Amino acid sequence: MDLYPAIDLRGGRCVRLVQGRFDAETVYSDDPVETARRWQSEGARWLHVVDLDGARLGSPQQLHIVAQIAQAVQIPIQLGGGLRTEADVQGAFAAGATRVVLGSVAIQKPEFAERIFARWGERVVLGVDAREGKVAVRGWQEQTEVDALELIRQMARRGATRAIVTDIARDGTLRGANLEMLSLLVRESGVPIIASGGVASLDDLTALKTIGVEGAIIGQALYMGKIRLRDAIEEVG
Picture 1 (cartoon, helix red, strand yellow):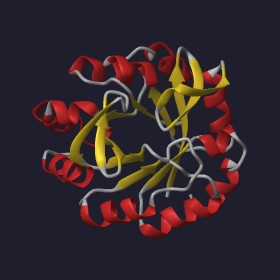
Picture 2 (cartoon, helix red, strand yellow):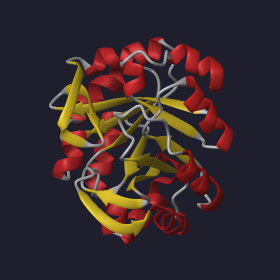
Picture 3 (cartoon, rainbow, N blue to C red):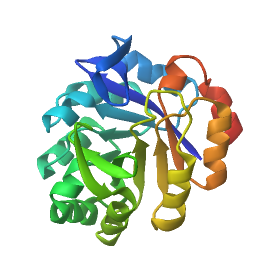
């Protein structure tokens, strides 16, 4: 199972939010580049970088920092946050991202998403952020009635090759992953699933591996020292 240390960028700093709330922010580092180097030194094979400002504003805001991270490490970067045009996607790749995440735009412009999947293939992953099984968009600020499983199935038919699924209610809370939802998606979606939200322990990661997710994104638990990345890689990686 692939493990993705999370680097969430807001205002040039490395932060964590609770349940996607911008008023519930903890700053963990003023130096995202050094944070990226740290996770690489501890054995990370991927980084998951999110431009939180970009997600909220609807266009990338921190590609210059992504470029600095890409120049500082030798491991691939998975980047999400505000990528809603072809120019945004190209800019993300130019900054050094190996893989990009399409989130809100998949609901708002499915034909565009299909075109991006067709052009870039495995370098594009669908991002699905859900509250009680329903998808939220625009940096989690706007709730829809779109069912997460149905969205993944639709996007798979349009060429999506994998999906990152975040349980918003658990993100940043250390409550454990939503195994019931993720098990359903692994069984029924038709594409590999990368889990995000709530991971708090090695036991959580073991449970995720058992249900068959392709990967897991780890944020708060790493920054608070509840999981050591080296131990996690040895256990489930």
